[in-house]
Amino acid sequence: MSNKDQIQRFMFDQLGARGQLVGLQESYQEAVSNHDYPAAIQQLLGEFMTAAALLSTTIKFDGSLTLQAQGDGELSLIMAECRHNQEVRGVARWEGEQLPSSADFKALLGNGRMAVTITPDKGQRYQGIISLEGDSIANCLENYFQQSEQLQTRVWLTTEPGHSASGLLIQVLPQAQEAVQDVDGWDRICQLSDTLSNEELSRLQNEDILHRLYHEEVVRVFPASDVQFKCSCSAYRTLQAIVSMGKEEMEEIFSEQPQITVRCEFCNSGYEVTQDDINEYLSDNGNNGSHTLH
Ligand SMILES: [Zn+2]
Image (tube, rainbow, N blue to C red; front, side, top):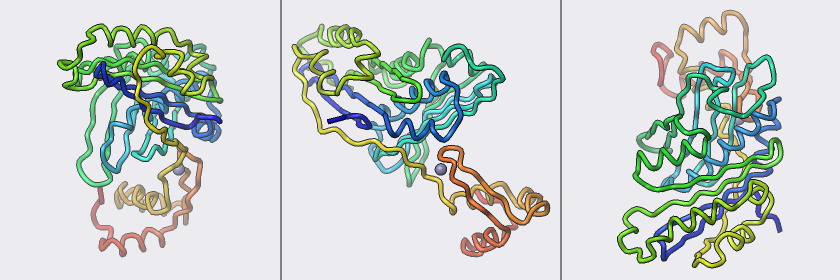
């Protein structure tokens, strides 16, 4: 039985540490199949989607986690989103003239910034900035956890471009370290995890990876949860986005054409919007369009 498109959580109770394995296959393939990305961008997008799925298990409410990097290079934007129920989507904007020779994301991004945003369905949005000082996305995430939450964390990410994306995260638990008697335990599981090859991380079943790495450790394994590609776009959200541009921009758009087609960057769905749709939306929402909605 395949365990792809799953998140597998596990715990080292005696060591005060936790771990997660993520494998994305159909969910990843669906995200890249909507676009004509070069292999290097497919690889980075796989890493972003895996990282977003790994981080999403920290969401304790209904909402989404977005991992996003923007820059002034050929890759102007790369972003992946995972909801609390493990619905993932991702997109990259790449406008290079030549195929990128490597998936060095800092070279592709240029002067960039990376952020993690947690957006509850109800309530305040939280954003944390991830320093681009690491030499890989995994390394940047490790530094982020160390700096923002003082949690020692190790992350491994690997992508087979166009096919699958996989990741492993291990992390010390907050406040658990004082009770831990096996003081070498953390270093030991880090060294063990380092022996996992990218190919093994991509190809092996979760239970085989856990056995291969930690068969001499005590590991408590939780039931896996399924991951699927799902886009949160809709006709209603498209209307919201157009209205939020403001009255002047809307008038300009519809003075040139009776209707516009808005295409979702994530899933390629198209939405036809007319002036009548906008008017209906505005009257339903008790607004005559005289001021900008946010
Ligand atoms: Zn969509």
